[in-house]
Amino acid sequence: MYKIAIMGGDGTGPEVTAEAVKVMNAAAAKFGFKYEGTEFDFGGERYKRTGETLPDSAIEEFRKFDAILLGAIGHPDVAPGILEKGILLKARFALDQYINLRPVRLYPGVWTPIKDKGPAEIDYVVVRENTGDQYTGVGGVTMKGTPQEVAVQTAVYNRFQVDRALKFAFEYARKYGKKTRGIGKENTLGLVGKTNVLTYVYDLWERAFHEMGKKEYPEIRRDYYHVDACCMWMVKNPEWFDILVTGNMFGDIITDLAAMTQGGMGIAAGGNINPDGVSMFEPIGGSAPKYTGQNVINPLAAICAMAMMLQILGEEKAAAAVETAVKFVTANKLKSLAAGKMGYSTTEVGDLVAQYVADN
Image (tube, rainbow, N blue to C red):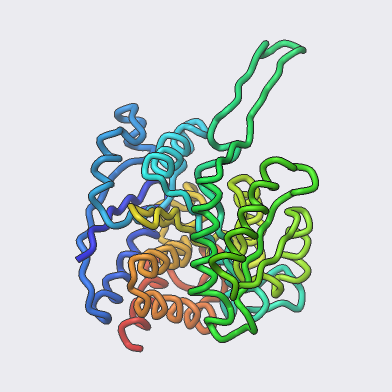
């Protein structure tokens, strides 16, 4: 019995989360696991009513759950940053969700802007360290508003943070690398950094990377990519990649580029992982408020986020079945991933995926 916190959030978030839950129900019935879902209303509307984002009491309550399924955060009537920092970042830091896991997978039938590349070439995973770097808030401003204004925001990492992120990445490469999945000759972990300029932070990352790899994971090939070169190769040769690991800022940037190569935000899912605690799973796209209530938004990213949640919880067969169902729907049913152009409504897409899980 899993305890799942369900937070639909803002805009179309509750709509896509409902479809993810629908598919999870089908997977639970098919594969024999049980869960108890509890809904929370944190988001823009609650902030407008009460002035609170995510109170400390909610963090303590979340600690009692096995995972959190999130729809979207972002409200047109709330200034940018308030909800993102007050809910998303607060949850990530308070629950020590130190890994952001981003599969980059082009599903069959989905258009990619990269010429002559298909599902066989665009199939890798980015492991992003999720609690360090510039996001820690170390820095400040002096003489604000004057011609002499100075702004400083510092990238901060300690060896503990780097080691635990690398360990997760190596373990993930060992378990889910391309060789393990039968589509490559070896499992490979690539470090994405900038050792030629950021000579302190990424020297630490690179030394830790090779020390750990040589000692504990000798069977995993180790590659290194400067982040700017990595961006070029994501477009030119995405088939080179298997599992990538990087810091918070670089990971934030390259995963948005990667999302575009896999068909856009409508299919991209992510997980904020604490391997020993409570993890949170979400579609990468925003709340899309202009489509709220129209039943036209694409729910597949939320469904894929739910599948990631099942995988991390240990329900491997159920997670694989959901992913197979999504592949079937993109290949055989949808006209487009765009809102209002799928050929089906939001609820109908959820029905298609759930039915395929139930029947296969």
